[in-house]
Amino acid sequence: MRATLTVSLPEDLNRALSAMVKRKGISRSQVVQDALRRQLALERFRDLRDRLVPKGGDAGFHTDEDVFKAIS
Image (cartoon, rainbow, N blue to C red; front, side):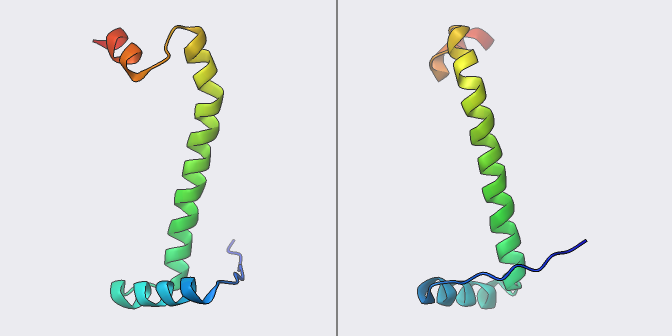
């Protein structure tokens, strides 16, 4: 099922979006869907990281170097 979303944009963002879709030959919907997918993936990553970092710290992993030492 598809849903329709109406979004209000400030003029500068609207102009930039219009120029981008014209240059790339894609629809405004495609740009917004892609941006939303990336934002949702970023939020999922941050949520997962927020849950796992304390566990890593408890296990002695405080830096990237700690991880690299453990896996090399």
